[in-house]
Length: 242
Image (cartoon, rainbow, N blue to C red; front, side):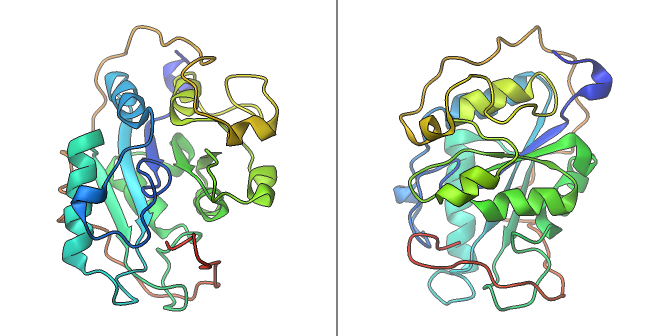
């Protein structure tokens, strides 16, 4: 474990495609399926006193495809299967709505970091597309890309840190802020598109004392309150519905 002054205090996960398999604009809790290693990764962070949260774009609300209630129900199911999470931040806007919360804008990352009493520099954002990494960078947080079949090659090439799966990313985080291009192993970048593996990560040391973290936020209540401001358009082509 890294020294106390060089510890990650919170990890903020993207939801769809990162924690759970992506179902475009999902409003059905029964369709929620965690990705391999998601529950173990979140549990490992909590065991080491590191806060955990979710920051998720849900433009289906703005498009009229799902309701706020649908999002809350799906979030509760994710919390049941993988959590509990300490904070949930949801942006219901579309790409042209002019908000500062929708990734790649940093609003949700900054808000969620504040909710777990952590500075952005002490947080890591884990996601599967370039907008997640850009939001982290704009907020002053670290970003780790965990690619999947919807991650573009140029997004993987541009990411400062890449991990082949969630457990590898988390095991690297236990040693402090991410270091290196491909985390926890020496496989080439192309290997990030292959099957997930639970090997290759550093072994966790004895967990430190519990961190001071606010009570878990109900994923259906107290979600991020969007603000105003312009946001540049991001890619919303089929297969990238957030």
